[in-house]
Length: 335
Ligand code: TRP
Image 1: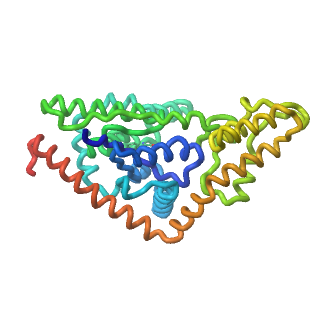
Image 2: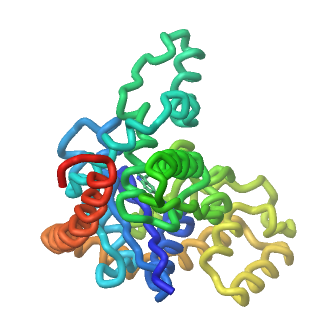
Image 3: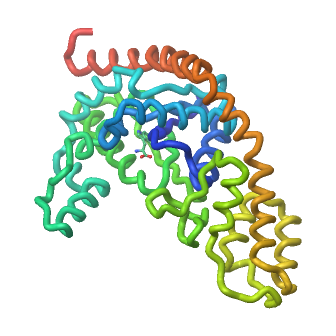
């Protein structure tokens, strides 16, 4: 059987946090390392243009996100890594898809609707502050996916609707031309993001401001972990590991034996929160130290990242050009 194509886009929004690491980066790297998949992971920088208008910030975020994935173990010999903005075929396909995308479909997009809701609440006109980039965001995303005949698209739950829209648009085109010009992609939801607990006990998310960023220097990491909200039980009281945010995070990094050991200390009483937090710090620091070192090396000499991204886009463009040719031909354009 030929390999399944797995593709995902990473929006450059700065250094990822532990939730991104466990929920998105690690599983995507595991897929890339499996022989039955061919992985294509790109930096969705044009998607960021809707909100990031400072060129230096956009550049820096792009490097940060590329360095993060590489430091976490993404291997450019196993996955195609490129910048969306280096693949102009994406934008030609976007124009094609626009012609087959019902305006009503875009009206139903959660991200757009959420903005309209905010405007209604604030008694602004409904489309206040909404640009066409945001409104048509799902079409650009569909182009990213369909350009490479992706079979599987690993994303967070919030992106599921966008994949379904890509399916709808692709089906409209296949139906019109009476042949499977475009591959219908399937979402693969990263469940673990749901379960990574943030500093305040809610799901870890940038929008809640409760994250632990991946490459914090040791001292800052320790300080951040000390901010995890715990209950006000006294030192001598036995504590329940199952309802504790510190323990919830510990579980994600420690072995079963280590977890059992710490759980016993919790239940025995006589353990203060400072102790539990220190155990967590030691564990996370042990996992993150080699990654942090690699990240710092990559950020110190960006030419390594530049070369990887350029090589990736050169290869990706060959595939993209072939796809566009097939589409142009089927649609009656000169090829
Ligand atoms: N919209 C995605 C996000 O915000 C990023 C993205 C852009 C993407 N294009 C994509 C994800 C294509 C998967 C496939 O996370």
